[in-house]
Image (tube, rainbow, N blue to C red; front, top):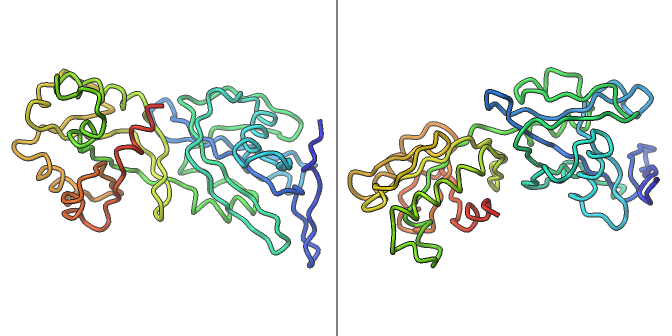
Length: 279
């Protein structure tokens, strides 16, 4: 069924863009069997605009739709991925024209590489390794935005005591038990894309949890959340780990004193942001 967004927007210079109310596409990532990030791309049918190029599933927004709804709907129509296994992580306006037309890229994850089913708008659907995307002949619009959308490996350090303390759920009655429960829950959210304001997107496969005091007795073992036992102060260990880091790093804490000890390159995530991953 055609929506009310189907149609061209024509600029004063004659340039045409599809979608009377703008357009949206879905940048869907999933881990390969070895855990590396892959992106679902569509090889556009030759009859379509910019046919023969590779791009994201997407299309015109209808007047009543949000960017997220439009992108997920279009991806389901064009790739048959379903909607229940798609987890949206953010959205970025990646094009805006003088005519008022805009394109928004919705960034999302799936836990595994979902099965796909083509419709007539594609000649192939493929899960492409992240570092091989720009080796394909890309749609010009996607090519222009890819640099701002691609992910970097991300290291996240967890101020476990501070995160536990942010929830008044009785954790103090059993610090080690509450710690194990928290870390187990966080492990289940990985891998995932994380948006860092002003920096872009990171691909997170592990969260490194620093434990101090009684929490060090937590019974927990999962490679997705390696544990670092602080010999003394947890803050000292976190600051030392952050200062020695050579990759894009974020630290989860609300402790302002600790934040002041971090290199300026280290991003800070609030406990509420990370706890929000638990749903």
